[in-house]
Length: 91
Image 1 (cartoon, rainbow, N blue to C red):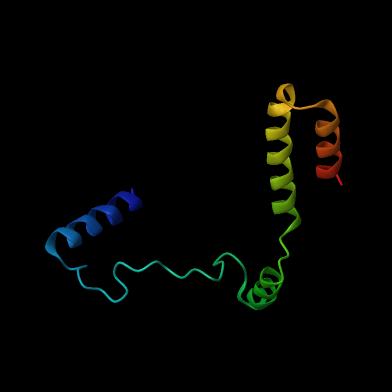
Image 2: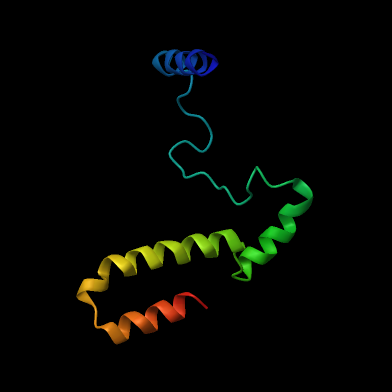
């Protein structure tokens, strides 16, 4: 219900032109920090991100997607290539 009221107020403000010419209009948002990460950890997370490190959960999810995609391609792949690719992904 609260979402509906908020959306309704936004639509009304847009129709009245109250949201025209706001600073940054038409420019992409810069979302460098994750608002769900506690403030005291953000600097450490940014350093790790800039160094190319990703959380284990992200690596696992990417690996799972790659394995699924590879398994769907198995009928079209040479068996030797498939086995090597699986071994590389499962390291």
